[in-house]
Length: 212
Image 1: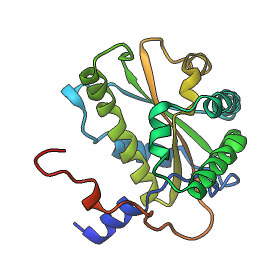
Image 2: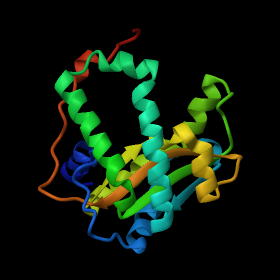
Image 3: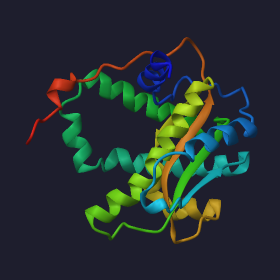
């Protein structure tokens, strides 16, 4: 394997919000090619209960309205665990993240492709084990999809804000009640130069040997 190329894709696949090219269409055939790669991701119990909804322009507009409504609620009611994580972040980084998120929300209807990744079943009332196993069966495929897109010159924004109104989004997309939406990917070619690795905590700060 070409380890350098693999490491480059893994370390430069960013969530792209501001730099999505809203004017350049993304061929459905290219999305299907990337999804074929993503479906090779590991899954629990060989269930392969994956489904990916790729939206048309009318559905993108409806989802964008839901997304903006959800984001208003999110700003007013940030999750407790996220508040704790943000205590470690630099204030300027948080401001930039919020602005880029708001930019995506304002232009979501113009993004060339929205992909909603779903999985058969419901686990919101399940145990931690059930939830971890369930989401661990769909999220690797979504990450593989982002990597496949990146390798072909496309960017993607991984977001879950619309799930605040999941049932409303399900009605727009015709998703059955016994299917769970996991991630919304906003997909497009990107503008500007290439991406670089993000500033992260040193590995030594997050590795625990033998015990916490």
